[in-house]
Length: 275
Ligand SMILES: NC(=O)c1ccc[n+]([C@@H]2O[C@H](COP(=O)([O-])OP(=O)(O)OC[C@H]3O[C@@H](n4cnc5c(N)ncnc54)[C@H](OP(=O)(O)O)[C@@H]3O)[C@@H](O)[C@H]2O)c1
Image (cartoon, rainbow, N blue to C red; front, side, top):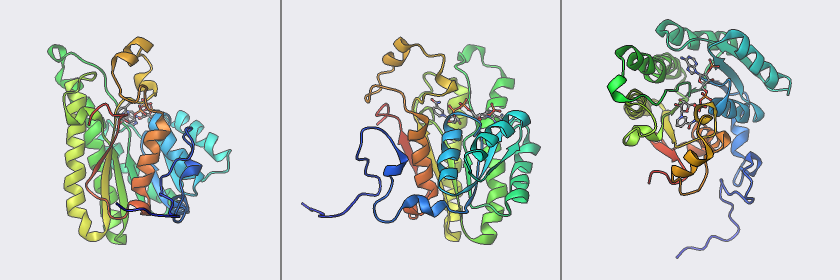
């Protein structure tokens, strides 16, 4: 048995309320983001917004991304008003040209790229008998192809600087039956996990890390239609949906130097829903 006296775990949470200020211990992990240039796709709301806010609070220069230019600028404006260094980059990731152009536009404004979070995505619960090929392709294009294209553009740049981090937001649906979501969603997220591992393997020799986070059920617009009864019926061992910040903090850990020896991994954030 080992007893470590006087040590502080990097992720010790000393309070039942989640608070990113409790990140700390041996060196403050969050100082590591000062002036880092990080693009978070799908950051106008939900998990992406929570990721962007944590990074910006800790000194990163963050690209706020969504489909609509006005909405993206409005969200970026709320963070700029808090004194954070963020700027808007709108693009419809259902369009491959826009997915490629997104990285170029981010770098034009930020000057370089240290991190990419492929978070944008979504899907519906569609019965398989009614699955249309067009819908299948649309889901794949936003959830998987866009991540592939943005990652490729980012990887080309990161290879030159021999550093960088990519984090993909997958889903519990990637690791078993989609259950509450359609087969298109589950299959696209399983593809994202595979992309994560394959790129991580190729990129590792250059010091570039690629990981994924697989959330279970998170309280965002995506789950807003679930009734209280339905939420209880999910049988989440921790007894509730995750807050967006609880997924965001894990994404930020994977972007930080505190995870410097982690690559090709999937971190599950699901309250015990899948073990
Ligand atoms: N919520 C959950 O329970 C849950 C569970 C597992 C995994 N996830 C995954 O986590 C990620 C974030 O989910 P969330 O719940 O935070 O979703 P959300 O609240 O619905 O937000 C989705 C974000 O993605 C953007 N987006 C969606 N489709 C896009 C497209 N075609 N092009 C550009 N941007 C697009 C949206 O931008 P606009 O402003 O343009 O709408 C928005 O910023 C998704 O990949 C989702 O699959 C969520």
